[in-house]
Image (cartoon, rainbow, N blue to C red):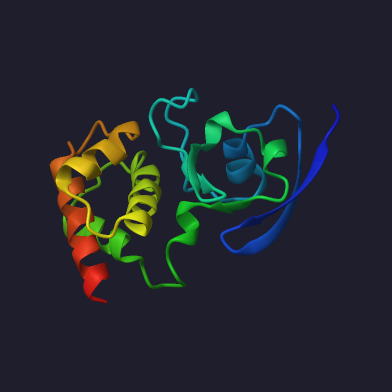
Length: 158
């Protein structure tokens, strides 16, 4: 089978990989690059578990081909923390018990960070609309909303 060489930036690092033309970005991240934070929940772009940012836009990595990201900048959940220091959103999810099984958590965290990067003081309604593409079957959403709002408040005062 023919393969394609791709050069991109992932979590701030220049990265090159080889993939099949029909291989999803999710599969490249998980199986070729060892970035297993993004999860495959549905494979159809309906659940948000595989959310990453691609050139500053949230995308479901299961719907993007690895070959399409040539020259792009990608941020995954692995790019949120700095060494052992968790991002305030990650810490807030722990503090508020806003996660259980962990399948949805990486996608929700990436989406929440994308929102707070654009709007550091969202209302609960704005936050719920922003996260509407990320499905959670375990926690319900109240703890998630509380965690994001707590992190947003801490980030505004930092």
